[in-house]
Image (cartoon, rainbow, N blue to C red):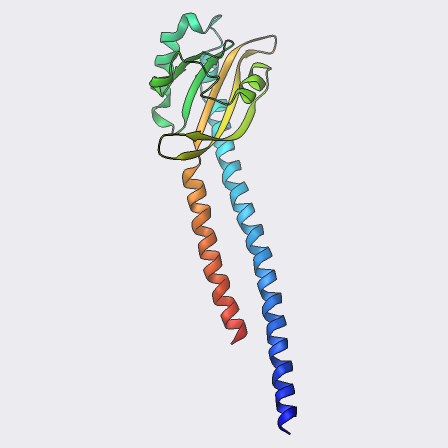
Length: 196
């Protein structure tokens, strides 16, 4: 009689353990899916906001009238400074020689974009295409994740430079990190309820 109870108890714990594993695996898969979708949503939202800002705004079209961006550097700089007051991103105007003609970060004006910005998407922009890339900006104290986007200035046969946007992604990754913690806590509670 005692051995029958032990055997039943052993089978019951095995069933509970298998059920626990199934719930754990299912919630982990769901968590990974939700977090990847959340990250994709934020990235797409930032990309769409920047694209909408450029397409609906007048900044890009205001550069079309300039034959040479460098010779109109002061005008372009004042346009960037006044236009960027309602925007959170860093904005750069880069010419064909990879020189930063204007920026709302005035410390970078007239410096080479080669070491400061993503060269591959600048090349895409100079080729007449809109480009996008993820990157990291290294400061003395930390590394900042960013999304970079470029838009060509000029027509297809005569690209004069690019309009370059850089968005800080720190708050997005902090939000995703907090969401992961909340999900893990919820998963632990669900597993404890399942076992009990």
